[in-house]
Amino acid sequence: MIASLSLILFCQLGGEVIVRGLNLPMPGPVLGLVFLLILLLTRDRFSALRRGPLRNDAVESTARGLLSHLSLLFIPAGVGVVKNLDLVIGHGIAILLTLAASVVVTLFATVATFLAINRLLTKRQVEP
Picture 1 (cartoon, rainbow, N blue to C red):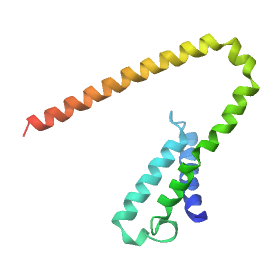
Picture 2 (picture 1 turned 180 degrees about the vertical axis):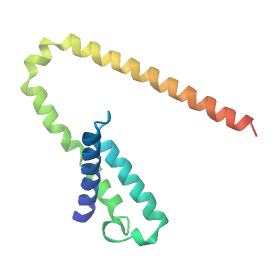
Picture 3 (picture 1 turned 30 degrees about the horizontal axis):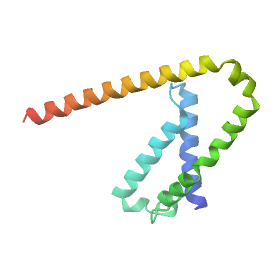
Picture 4 (picture 1 turned 180 degrees about the horizontal axis):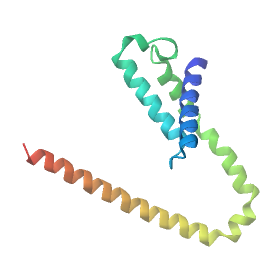
């Protein structure tokens, strides 16, 4: 489990280093997840990579363990909100308006993405 956790963190570190080094407009952990996905996909194709933390679904079981305790990571954020409650109360209306606007924008982006993918899939089914 330690080796699998180290591999996951190493992928995250690699993503962070590349994003900061190349000044890319994306979070480093996202690129690290892409690295981990590529590593797991190549592991399934090449048996030579099925060693150490990549054998017997060790990475997957470690990731499941992390996900089962993910709620613990929200405790520091909750403590920060309670600690700065006066700021939250003072800017409450602005926070609520920003949250409402972000929900609306997210819904529109989701609908637009769904419609675009639906059109592409419909065109593919009609063309043959």
